[in-house]
Figure 1 (spheres, rainbow, N blue to C red):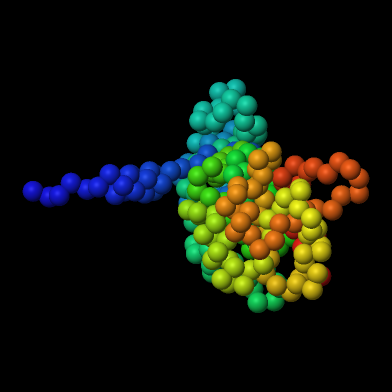
Figure 2: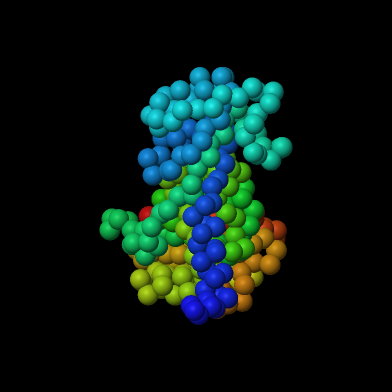
Length: 261
């Protein structure tokens, strides 16, 4: 008689099976078009209205997928009622970006920049951060597998196509990942409003180094262990007494302020 598997082994196997079966419904013309044009994206089912198909015809042909036609008054995709789908929805598998260390090595030309998110759960914030990360050339946006925004249609729509091009990596433990980046030579800066040092001050003479920017959830900010793992805590310098930014705005400002030149 075979020995009974420990509970943790069973749970791990169940989680792996669930992940393999996971799919995401992307919606909106921009998000759907970019996913259709992405050869790395596994596409399962496309639902479109005649008007949306006319706008997406080139991308649909390139993807080689046969769309299901839908009545605009009875759009059949399983989306939240408030989703602004613009007559297009695409069921896909989540993207697999591969090895974190390999992605974060950079291209050898510019000093790499990485964004880490500590419990940032709003998909609109993460989508906006992915968009900024793409604009400013970050290697990746990294978040924990739990207590972070997953890959969803709302996130993809806010990212405005960046989800298909900007690595969004999910890791088991953020503090361990910070340690891995530090071992690779990254200078890890945690953003905290009460920090004494500004981001620019911390980077003086170090802009040629690989830099990781760690941002926490609005309100609670960085968790204690995350703070302790960073090399320095820094703040964004403000002109007046009021110094508070939405986390996606803070990420954009920090990426711009940390650029190499």
